[in-house]
Image 1 (tube, one colour):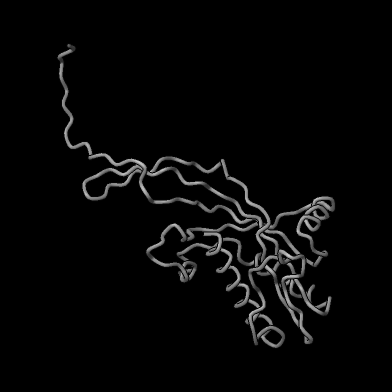
Image 2 (cartoon, one colour):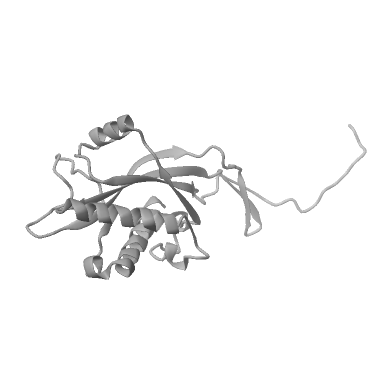
Length: 205
């Protein structure tokens, strides 16, 4: 589900950039899902010899959303009641970093990211039927129902700690909180026959 959500947002940002600034960003996809650093400590994005402009989308934290109701699910399949554990509701914190050989271009990219989320704060399958286009229908647990996205502010101290933990040099960036993704495995934990008859008796023995 995390991959589904981030791939969808990456595709939407790329489409947005091509609509808004086809001259500078119309030839190739700019937004991509990636860590900032490789395990060996090198930067994950290869700059090469020419100009490069990228929006790097990186998951940096998860938190459980305890406000959302989590109740057991009951489903009737083949004359049996199946009990499924309640979903785990997760909020994801995602870092959008603008990387470019030219610093002014990086600032332009970051401005586009902020403008995109200002115009698009809620994504659901009704308005965006392609949100689950890459998901196998046999894997319903990977599907996204609804995403609500808000800007997440950080202090200078939090920002410094974050980039130190990432092992990277600071880049123009913004953090967005994505609410709420419900993780659920539809494998039943209990199966019982349904109640088909209720008998009331006065016999107290």
